[in-house]
Length: 73
Image 1 (tube, rainbow, N blue to C red):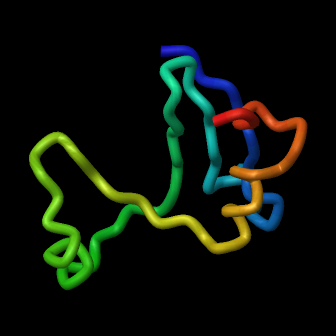
Image 2 (cartoon, rainbow, N blue to C red; image 1 turned 90 degrees about the horizontal axis):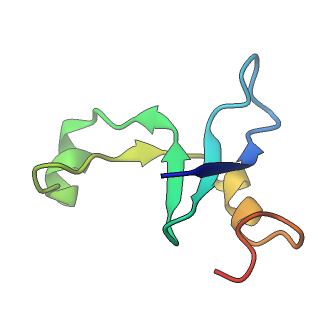
């Protein structure tokens, strides 16, 4: 799998994390904060082999910015 960096959180120090990546498989990788709230995890009912991360609202516009690696998705 090849990853292309789309955006790091400009308000995060020191590592611009959370971070969004576009893959060459027509999907996204989202690096974010580990979800460890028991109630939230119970609501998600995640199957084996899946996990969840949390990102701030301010990262959502990066999915749609013109000229980004995620265009035409």
